[in-house]
Image (tube, rainbow, N blue to C red):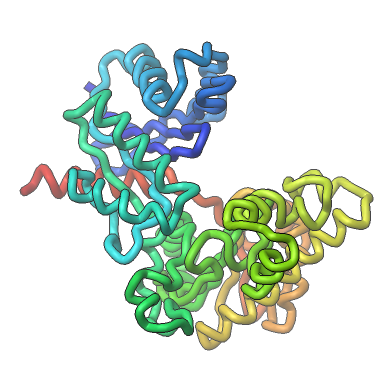
Length: 398
């Protein structure tokens, strides 16, 4: 029988997933990826194989997929149909917040699940959906192990000062501190750097994860030193619909002047700001780059400017820079944005190779550049599959 690992990433009304097979070399091999979207409203189930070819794309009645349990049932039915001689070894989950409890992936049990529920106040927009999915999988296939992989875990290596806010100590002890996110993406990039250059992997690198959610991470020898996101995934860079860095007094002003409560502020900062808010047009960088509207150009300019500002801060945390790496949707696909960021970084000695940038690298800089620039596609699903397989191997050897 073919051993399979299912990787899952739950949203409020969607469930993204990937299927990996286990090889003799113990390295997961991508088989397929898909999504159940419109859960509870207009469900649609789509799957593509590893080559990107569509295998399934169909609508479902809403009563079939009212919640994550229904999505699990649809995926499980498809797995049984498509992989008749397969065995589901485990399900690996992307869990946004590991809080102060989890510095590495863990097998989910009752104690872990209780701890995850205790972290809901730190990630109220994400954590409940991960928990709901874990419970749905437990109900559907109770004998199948589940592994929680945390977006915060990679940043545990940061020094204490990089994690701290200047607030009363009682709040710090309560968990009010910088955590950082996109850790699974950064961990994958760190694992991919040695194949590009051993010197690069051992050096001082800033990785720019630029997508609808965007952040940057300073790494020394593949370990996180500092990052732009902090207590939540709202801080740092301008994002698709999130504001990024913001003076906290702006919130006090909005509460006093406009009578906004926590939920109204949440909607404003998470869903109405960022590229969408500045441009008034779209949260999609592709749409903004294609637009002649001045507000679209202003949104792009602010996006790039904030990357340049944060890059300077991260270089200071590293005490210098050897390489800048772009990844995620915008970082991997937009030569225009990469070029603008690299031009802003010319003061570091970064010389962009325009032709290499247009063909998407992997190396984007000139041979004589003092700081090299790279484009490296990320693969968070593979990172989760690796962690899941590693924990299963450890479990079987106990």
